[in-house]
Image (cartoon, rainbow, N blue to C red; front, side):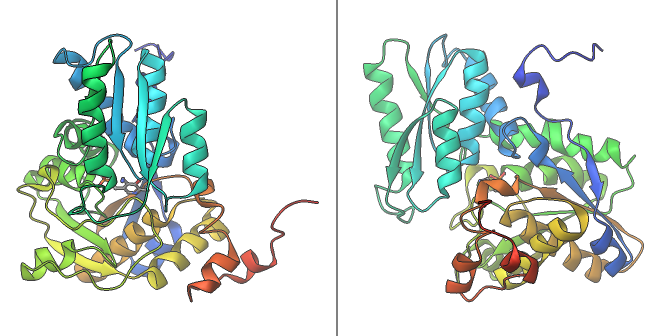
Length: 339
Ligand code: PMP
């Protein structure tokens, strides 16, 4: 195979597995992080974006010069905009106002048209996902080159990216010596894809659910309880999306921010890994799985996106303090900007 990638799409995936030293030492397990922040758009969602675009092209729905419309917490939009740009497509992104400024800025840089809507639950017709579906239908009628709705929550091309990509990569990189995989859910594409690819090979699957999400109570009690809330972005879910259909996790935990954030801070301070909050929830889940399985197991989790995307929140002592969240000493001492 040529070492030269023909385009950006070919540079999506194939991310390294990085041993997480402190989590491994603490548990006596090998805890490995799949470095999804090393994708071209710096998140795991580049994979879903690429599979969704390719699938729409293959089916003849997305034609040259066409527009991709999506409701996204940001990362899928960045993936769609970048991969889309490399293939000659336009993107229109509907995003809740509450998402980080850095992600919105990056979306604009990547050439997306941004529509910001107030954060609203899924049952509200103006929820960002439902809004994006209506907008896609309107644009499909009015734009000459046509438009598609990426619909990452219910479009199964999303989980297919992990069935064909992430899951087999983890199997090959560990040479089949993997006992468990753990991750949080936004759309469920990653969890469902890992489950489909790896559960039949005897790998246990764990859900790490943030506070404010209903999935932990659904999988453990069959109810939809959503206690608490979280500053993490891109994860948490109130319904069983089409991507999650049929998923049966072997383990499930509800991980509070007070447990996940110190892990994010420690990974930067001691292991040089600059990550977003969802990676902290995932590593916390991997540590919980290690404790339940006992020493000697290999557990893989997902390092979902790069931390600079959250400069104004996760790495902002005032933001954290206002919410009663832990602030590491070194972050408090770090200058906010260089004079
Ligand atoms: N972490 C981050 C930062 C994300 O943006 C997302 C996607 N929304 C996820 C995790 C969850 O991935 P998935 O959609 O595959 O469940």
